[in-house]
Length: 158
Image 1 (cartoon, helix red, strand yellow):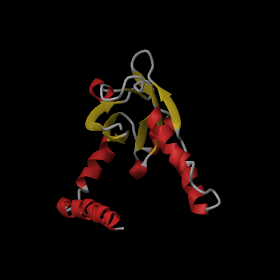
Image 2 (image 1 turned 180 degrees about the vertical axis):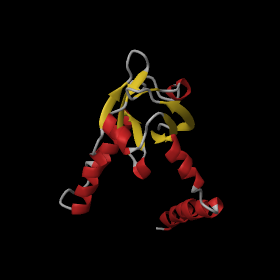
Image 3 (image 1 turned 45 degrees about the horizontal axis):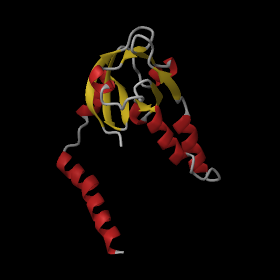
Image 4 (image 1 turned 90 degrees about the horizontal axis):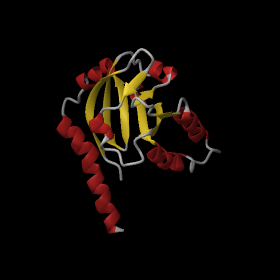
């Protein structure tokens, strides 16, 4: 299982190209450092997946019952803007203009890597997100992670 980690401040050039930081690229398995899928994320960021990780996610999405309207709506929005991108000979990724506009990205960005994905944020939006840090992060952790522990115990009971 892929487990990316880190925050990386980067710049996008005038043509919309991003140089992937070498310390982030080293975290990717051999053979998964060249092709990615870039997609719209939540909270006006972009999400970049190594191609093999994207294929795992779409396998789950493709199991949805498309006779259900909520599922159809989700699928349409989920796939909207999804683009395969590849590293060029100069070790850069060309990010589609429509996706950069969606995320309000101009020059300064933050790559936030976690789990199997890399979120791409405009630096301004990312900094604004961190200003809205929960008043009580410990309480949020308990609400999110504490319930997970209870659910695991309930699973053991049956």
